[in-house]
Image 1 (spheres, rainbow, N blue to C red):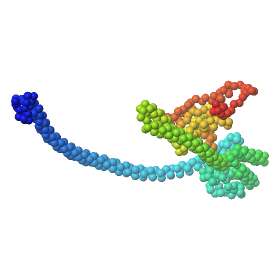
Image 2 (cartoon, rainbow, N blue to C red; image 1 turned 60 degrees about the vertical axis):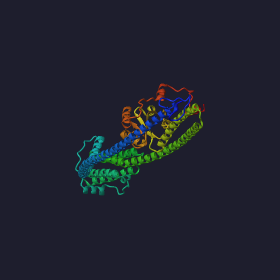
Image 3 (cartoon, one colour; image 1 turned 30 degrees about the vertical axis):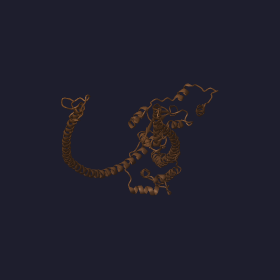
Image 4 (cartoon, one colour; image 1 turned 180 degrees about the horizontal axis):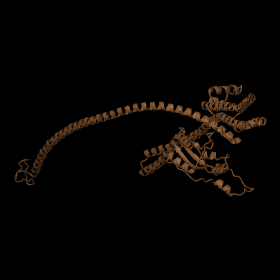
Length: 519
């Protein structure tokens, strides 16, 4: 029996093939051959892989080199371009600097010229004001006593003014309040000079010493009366002071005319002109009281504003604490939900917790926005500008424009519409601004000439139309809302009622609101 040439095994059940090997040995040889072939293929692949890696390294090196070359080139070109632009900008800057220097020189020259023009203008204005006052005094006299106006004579010399000062002035000189204000002092001095010129001018009409003496005594007495009127002048007594001047001048006119009918026309003209100038002197002194009252009202407005701001700050602080407590509740709830999510393994429960978390987070975001709004209001600049009207109380074209830092600006409007006015206010606009005082000031400046009270500027009422207000609001704040309608419900309802029933039940709005809260 044949044996395997490889393993040497033989037998009946151990068959040998034609190549002298058994089946197992033939399969082993095939596997060994396959292994040698695969090893050779792997060696070839490894060789190719090494070649590829070398090629990749070469490509990378070439890429890095090209990148560096391109980068350096780009840098050089960019630097050159920047240098060119910088040179252009430097040239432009140099040109601008030269123009600035030239403009500064022109501005300095123009400023000097402007100062000269302003000085000339002021001198001319003073002369014009002087002539206007003189003309008005003559016009006043002619209108009052039905005499023709005589042309004003030339302005007196300083010597003539000094003569009038010595002969026709009172011995005692009052310390007037207006002397503390430069512009008023200048106006009063101009008016006083016109009075002296008038006195000298009319004195020249008398030829006898007796008449001149009587005239001078009358003038001194009138000057004393003027000083007495100025001494007793106060903020509420302008009309009384003017009335006193008119009464005393009428007395002097009657006495003079009764004494000598021949001088009646001259005395009438003189009394008319001197009366006008005396009234002008009182008005100039009264302007001091107006300014003083305006300052007092402004100081009062500042104090009231400080009180209001303090009250609003307290309300805002209480609201902020309330919001922070609400914020803390949401944050604690969120922390609890996150803790449950970390401990839970149930996917359904986790999804439910996630939905709950999203809902709570949205609520927290709303609270944070509310808190941010309160903080902005607390900063002192943020607030609401309100434009309101009260048709029944003030009429159709009277509006109040004010500012409040309340969180709910309607609260301030409700305060204004309390028992001090018969009807509630209608709101035309609430304008929120990060700089509410500045916006309010701009609105007031635009309407300054239409103030109802021109002395007490804290009274923020303006006489204007709804169209003008709407255009003004949109020009300053395009995103603002503006309501043109004047509801004035209670006013129109009141106009429709002929008489109030005897058994009318008066309901207090505040009590009604309290009942609603209790319910």
